[in-house]
Length: 284
Image (tube, rainbow, N blue to C red; front, side, top):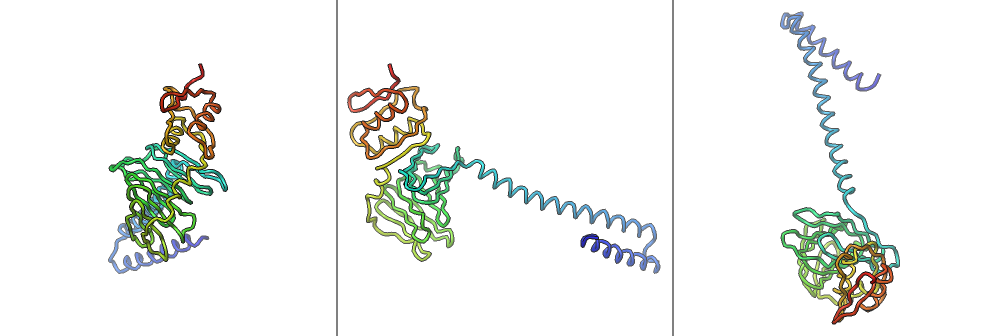
């Protein structure tokens, strides 16, 4: 006999003894005694069943919600000693991932906010949208922006830092709720469980991400947009109908012209030089 069965037997025995005593003293008729015993038994079973059902619903809901959340997140990881891995998100924001860095993000952002999850170091070039804040979650820190460019260093939780190239961001320490605002030219630091700001000393950190870059299955239009944002002088242009061609390619300190040639070789296209730009088109 299980413990539950033993407990039920003891409870039923005590209940029956009480009913018998009340019946002997004329305080409870036999019919009432049977009714109450029956009602007690049925009520107990229904209450127990409902309780188990509610617990099951809550447990299943938590598991399903977590699984659905993870299921709808895409994952991107840049291996050790690899060039910066560049990806363009649904809203047009560009993320540059350093080596040994992972990013989880939805294929489609929520209507109210754009949220991603970061582990490691990355440079974000966020497309402005005041109605949909861009939120970056790390283990210790939450970063909220409206539209800006900044470098997040989160590989070492004890030495978290965020440097802003342009715009302004809000940084919140999850453990204490402390928040600071970091502006262009400033760096936010986490030291001894406290957030601080100071002038940015290494401005070159922003450009270090673009010296060696790689793309994996990125749209040609997005690759060209990244190149144009980081190149001076000649700009690249994609002919209509080629925007969605997928491209996997790496560049290392290449000029815009050299990158255009590599793209054309990889996708069997041709580069046509025009005034101040290079047009990427189908082979004639």
